[in-house]
Image (cartoon, rainbow over all chains, first blue to last red; front, side):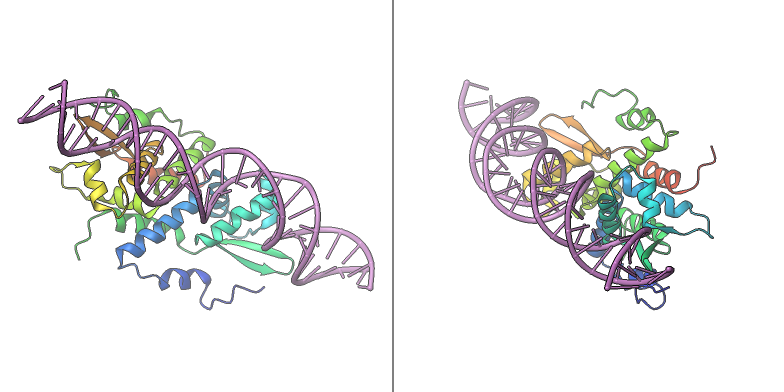
Length: 121
Length: 121
DNA sequence: TCGTATAATCGTGTATTGACGATAAGCACT
DNA sequence: AGTGCTTATCGTCAATACACGATTATACGA
């Protein structure tokens, strides 16, 4: 099984790259993550991944099957979730295993706190 | 000063009306709230309102002044924040005082938890 | 009642979103 | 090489988002 090519996990690289001391950056990242969440179908996908038992894996076709949408539409939603930083795909032969970016929920909530609570810098 | 006409506060009415036992409803509401957050300008508005000292009030023109956008654009963002359930306006003569829906942050985070954690119903 | 301040709306142009069917591309297995 | 499964992309269409200047509506004060 091959990952994105992000040593240390795609999650860590993605999140640790960000300059979360800059408020403008935080607002942009938070806005982007929020856009990822801004559709019920995408929330359902996140929900599936959050609630998945540790031993189970979801590939794209599982998600297509679970949603009342055409394959192309689901693929688009997955793309948006990738672009907005929620998930990444592990390529496994002809399949793509969909994984939540590690700690992304915690990161999102932390960003919300950072942005909405007064910064004493 | 005149409110929306929502007895008990516009907040309580809005939030308590929702059927948060229905997962589909939760997903829709959460998606709507996330859409509200999905633009840096709107995040900045929410941030201003969250961080506002208790004795201060923000009217629309304050927000226009604080953002690098035209009045019409800010008005549109405020409208979206109203439609997505984040804020409401208290009309005060020719002014409109912008207020966060009470407990909306907590409600948002609660919805996130509800949607992303397994439901044992 | 006339003028001023405030905020919403209108009209416009461009960009993005969301949905779909159809097609292409990648891999595995004969 | 050919077949089948899986996923991404293309092309299209309608709807929505975003930004703006201009205009309108409302309320207050002189």
